[in-house]
Image (cartoon, rainbow, N blue to C red; front, side, top):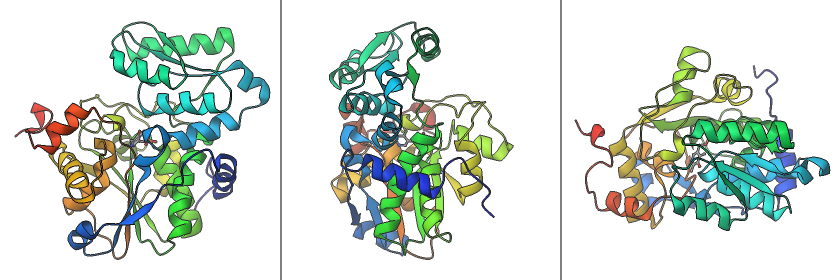
Length: 333
Ligand SMILES: *Cc1c(COP(=O)(O)O)cnc(C)c1O
C-alpha cells in the first residue's frame, strides 16, 4: 500500500502542464543492439538531449515557475557546479529571475564560465563545496534569496517526474524502467509517475558501486553519510542529506531495487552508447546501458533505460571510448 508520499501523480501532471514548452520532450528510441543482449525490447529515453544537457532542467524549471512573484523577484540560489547549477541558471534566466550559483575557488574556470554563459550570477567563495553552501545559507538568511536544492524538494521531484510521465504515457506496456540514482530526485519522481499510472511496472535505481549514498541509506533504513569516491559517474556523487525530507522516503517506498555498477561497467556503457547508438553520454547517463551489458537486469518484458545526461569532459570521454584503461586506478584489481 502506498502511503501518502510528498509528491503525487497529480503533482507531476501539474508540473508537466507548468513546464510544457519550456523543456524538450525527449525522444525514445529502440535499441537493437541491447535487445539482443537483454532478450527483451529495450528503449532508450534520450534525455541527454535535454536543454542544458540533463533532465535537471525539468525540476529546476518547475521549481522556479512554482515560486510566488515576490519570491521570484528575490532570486534563486544553489551551490551546484554541475548539472543542477546549469539547469537552474537557464531556468531562472528563462523566467526573468536571477540565479546566484555559489562555487568554491577550486572549481575549474571552464565550469565557472559555462554557468556564467547560461546567465547566472556566479559567486566564488572559499575552498570547498561546504564553504560554497555556507554562502548559500548566508544569502538565504541575509538577502532573502530562495534556495532551490538539486533533489530534496517536492517541486524539483515533481519536475523530474515529468520524465517518467513521458515514458509511461507513450509506452504503458513497459515492464522495467532503469533510472540513474544519486540523491533520488529523478528516481522518486519517475517512480511516482510510472507506478501512479501502471503500478506493476518495476523501477530500478542504478548507481556506482562505491560512494552510493542512497543505497547505503536504504540498507540502513535511514539517511547515512558515505565517503565520497571519484567515479566516472561524477553526477551521481554526493550525499542525500542526513535531514532528507522527500527523496529517501519516496525511494524506500517506490523503488523495486538498486543495482550497483563498477567503473569498468560504466565505461563499457559509455563506449556502447557511442559505438552502437552514436550517442555521447556522461558516466551517470550510461548506467542503464551498463547494467544491461553486465547482465544485471532481469526483465520479463520491455525495458526503458533513461540516458540522463551528456555533460562529460570530452577529453575524458575520448579516453573512455578508446579504452585507455579504467578512468581511476583504484578500480583496477
Ligand atoms: C543529477 C543527475 C543524476 C542523479 O539524479 P538524482 O536526482 O540526484 O538522483 C543522474 N544523472 C545525471 C546526468 C544527473 O545530472
